[in-house]
Structure formats: structure tokens, C-alpha cells
Image 1 (spheres, helix red, strand yellow):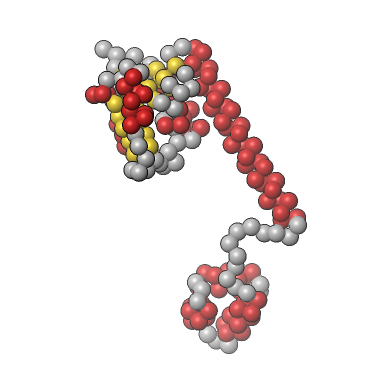
Image 2 (image 1 turned 60 degrees about the vertical axis):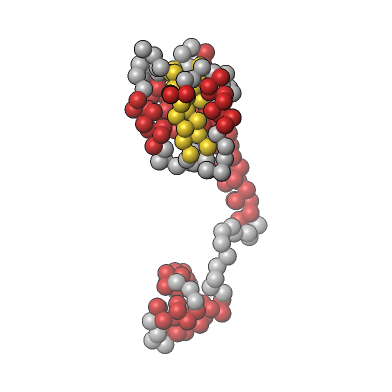
Length: 187
């Protein structure tokens, strides 16, 4: 007998699941088949989702309030949807009004995933363009170095005078790797 499961997720324990829970119950999910998880969408470790995936049988369905509750990234969402489809399990998203038991629903999931991937690619391209433009103007991003020219000169003179790199690092209040990296970069 086919079962309709509900999956709700929030990222932190301070967030409230009541809205998702109410929407899933109103959509016909039996409270016994509601799976709730508190885990960041960015982390691989989602034990409730993994247990749900193991529990599903052919002709079951999974209902979520929004697609982003299910997948931690576009590629992860596509993999989950593909696995559900391969196993004969339908996915319904209430917010996006998508139902993968229909061909139009499957098409919409793939279109949304493609659009989200394109958006991520465009953001990445714009970021790289902005960084290149900043570099061309002499601005370098990242954390400012702790090794001023004076500190580097002190480190160079101390090591040349026979002090160990570890002793120089302690005296300057920086890590050994910082001293080594700067000495090697300015040799």
C-alpha cells in the first residue's frame, strides 16, 4: 500500500517547524509518516532524510513544503529527485506546486534545477570578474598579512643570525608556517 510521507526541515533548533508541519498535515500527510529534521541544508549529514530514503517503497510519495527543504544544493536536489524517480516514488512540493508523478511536474523540477544552476554559475562568474577587476586596480582580497615589511626584515635577519624559525615565530607572535611562507616568498 502506497504511503505519503512528509519531510520538514529547519536549519537550527531556534527555528520553528510548526508552519511546515501544519502545511504537510493539511496536504494529507498522516502524522505517523511525518519526518522532521533539524539540520543545515548545506551539510551532508542528514540522518532523518537518509532514513526516509531507505524507508520508501515504489508508489510511495514524499511531500515537502518547498524544494529547498529537501536538497542542500541544486546538484543534491537533482540527485534526490532522480533517485526518487528511479525508485518509482513521487515528489510533491506544495510551494512550487510541483508533482513529479506527472510529466509536467518532472519537467518543472528539472527546469527549476537548471535555472538555479545557471543563477549559481552567473553569481560565480560575476564574483570572479569583480575579483579580477579589483586585482587590476591593485586591490587584493583576503585577510591582511600580519607580516609587515619591518617584521619580515626582523625575521630574515634573525634566521640569518642563527635563530630557529620556531623561535622567530614565537618572538613575532605568528605561526611557524607564516614565517616560512614569507621567508620563502621573499628569498
